[in-house]
Amino acid sequence: MKYAVTGSTGHFGKYAIPYLQKLIKPEDSIIALARSIEKAKSIYKDGVEVRPGTYEDPDQLIDSLKGVDKLLFISSQPGAVMSRIDQHNNVVQAAKAAGVKFIAYTSFPHADTTEAPLAADHKATEALIKKSGIAHSFLRNNWYLEDEMNFVEEASNGEPFVYSAGNGKVGWAPEALYAEAAATILTTEQPKEVYELAGPMHTYAELADVLRKVTGKQFEIASVSDDEFMANLRKYVPDQVDAIMTMIQKLIRNHALEEDTTDLADVLQKPVPTLEEQVQALFKTPEK
View 1 (tube, rainbow, N blue to C red):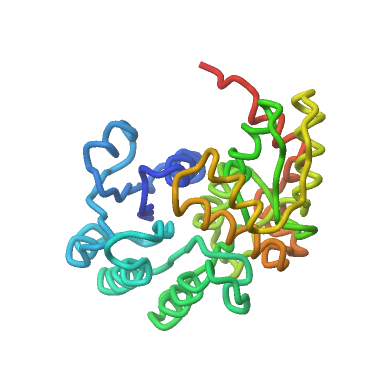
View 2 (cartoon, one colour):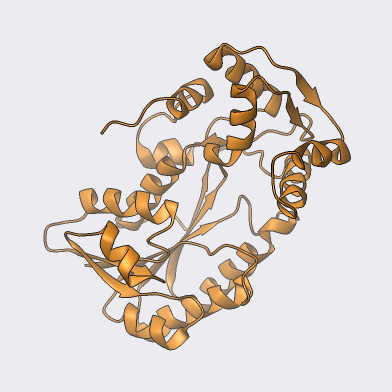
């Protein structure tokens, strides 16, 4: 069995491939697809073949996917010169042309039914994969705790914890756990078509309380309007990023990330860490 991972030099790919190495059989092999061959080779020195994998180059993708049985398709970042859906279409069509038999695609919570603007590309990509006729699993990842580092860092410095998501809940979990689940699903003989992957549901107020407990810092917790949230963001994030982060707060306030699912724990066959355990882990010094 030959496995491939797109976006192999990004955070998710760098988590997923080591997990995959632990799960595959000795006779199996892994291909890391990357925009930068040099960067990928510096990361994956043993037991991983590196091939070019630029989402904008369909001919290159076809060549690089030849011989691949199963593909972990990590969604690209929006905002590039080529639209994300065009990039994704290139990957799907290349996979079909190369004879890939299975795709696991990192998607968005309830991508097929949600009205969240951030889900539009994911919904369209899921449709492309279905239309291709390739067997698949949609890995609808909820939210990475690491996405909240702005909040964590501000709170750690005793600055106010400001949010506009109201009582909307989020299924935070470490990105590494989502990647471990992806590798597990990729190597499963009969995976489900859809996985709603999420950690325990919590509000931002609950996250703030956990940060107070873990850091020992006392800081103001303020639930504000979107305009006030954006104005606060402008103190420490670049232009345009403030608008994106505010949009995310709005979709959370509208309950776009609330789910009742045990898929992540079921796939991993272990409990997802509590929010307090997750936050504590953010402050641990990595082992050398």
